[in-house]
Image 1 (cartoon, rainbow, N blue to C red):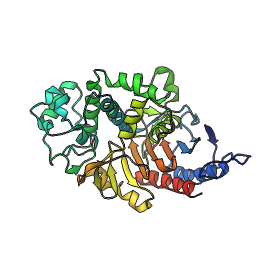
Image 2 (cartoon, one colour):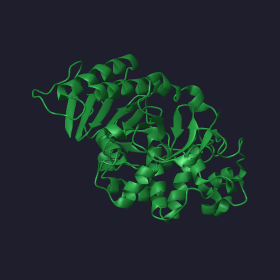
Image 3 (cartoon, one colour):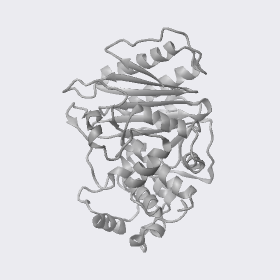
Image 4 (tube, rainbow, N blue to C red):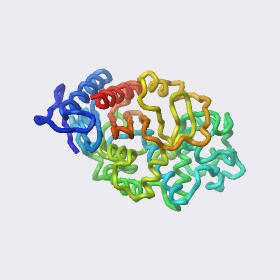
Amino acid sequence: MIRRNVQSAAIVLLCAWLHLPTIGRAADVDTIVTQTIQPAMERYGIPGMAVGIVTGEQRRVYDFGVASKATGTQVTGDTLFEIGSVSKTFTATLASYARTAGKLSLSDTASHYVPDLRGSSFDKVSLVHLGTHTAGGFPLQFPDNITSNDQLMAYFQSWKPTYAPGTYRTYANPSAGLLGLIAANSMNEDFVTLMQGMLFPMLGLKHTYLDVPAAQMENYAQGYTTTDAPVRMTQGILWRETYGARTTAGDMLRFIEANMHMLDLNATMQRAIIGTHTGYYRLGAMTQDLIWEQYHYPIELTELLTGHTATVRNKSNPVIELDPPLQPRDDVLIEKTGSTGGFAAYVAFIPEKRLGIVLLANKDYPIDARVTAAYEILTRLSND
């Protein structure tokens, strides 16, 4: 992997010409990334970013700015960023792994795996519904007063869907959180133990954490709100299952490679990863996979941005069920955004081109800006 440390307004370009599949010279890649990222950082006052690019067999990570304005510590390859809801893609991978290992079926109802929910609305909500935000209309977040497992079960027991399961998409943490809880229960283990003790090691992710070890806290970037107040994530109920991962750009690049079948992984794990790319519902140009969101490729930026409007993110929208589900394919762009109060993340990849990007920032800035920046870089690299 090639790493670029970016200081102020200039980037160190390669002195030699390298042969790189599909993207030309390494210096061109450096220029494309810098010309796109630095204006965005200046416009939104982003203190630090890590940008990862994978194309063919080449991997690059670019480090911009500082991990903390108070200390002036530079962003490095060890800097940990909160990735918000991109964490859900790990949860989806665990659920898919449990399915591939014969521990659960995504077509089963949630109450089949949680006895406390039998006789509730979850008798009609499948695990696919949970993983595609189509359970029937959860709020985005859990109520603040839910802090224990007993309160969580009471909340789920009393929940009544606004829509029939599988008819409307409402992006929500409760459904994805419950999917993670069920996936762990099906394997008779704690969620954190499975993720940090099994999933992350199997993927070769050496700097990805749900609970950051004390020895790694010095690498944990400081986050900043849109008004530049220092902040880190609030740890609410099921936070680890929904938005709790902290990781590096290098580790996220490896996860992208795993999603493009570019690593030598355990066969069960590889099938599980590709299984998360199955499409279950369509909303406009977007196909809802298991947590991942998928678009045909090539795609126009305006069409891609339509899937990220406030209406799609924050409201309930009718969906079309794909029957049978759309099987994983390569001629698509697969992506996921993630945000916490002080961090912003975006991950996108195109399997057919073996091309992907990771954007990690220690300030929450608009999703449209992330998608636009990533789209510009991917398009320029793809066409170079």
